[in-house]
Image (cartoon, rainbow, N blue to C red; front, side):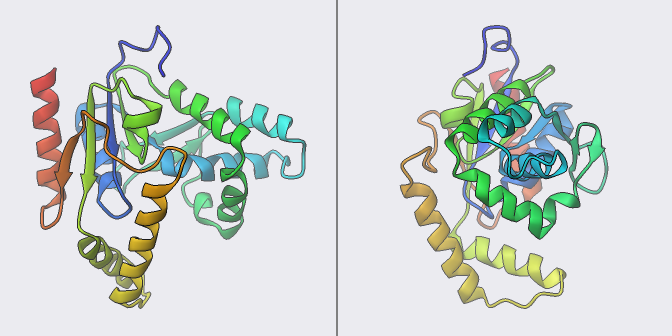
Length: 229
């Protein structure tokens, strides 16, 4: 929950399953409004990289939590090539994709103390003129007082096809059937987990992006935003 001093800062929370397009939609909405961006899915990798860079990998959990709480991360949408991730003003976008960072992120994701520290960090990213928060529980758990909550979804088949096209562009060949099975399994895990399950907030605007262009999705979100403002 936001502190009383931050409650006046507007938040647009965009949640949804993997492959629904919420990352791109959030970036474009933030860019068009001039808002800050929070990619909550990347925060564990940012924290993991900060831990590795600080030489804290094998240190007591208390020291790691202190480091995670004090780190300064920012998601820059000003460029034409997507989102740049800055950690203490250093561009770490590429470093977040390494296997070492990913492995460390998996290790810390199950640690309650680190999850709590990251929640605090996410709250500090609520700054003027506003914030677009992308994730799976932004509207239900992290920013329940968001002015606009969006739950962006798409059929599992559509999301699998999008992922296949993305991988093909990277020169990777993966069957549509295997991707569909992975997405369905992930959906099941996310919706049935006990802590912050994937679900729309009671007052969320639900958008099905199946067969809809990302620009139309963004236009819809901004139209509703301006109506509410």
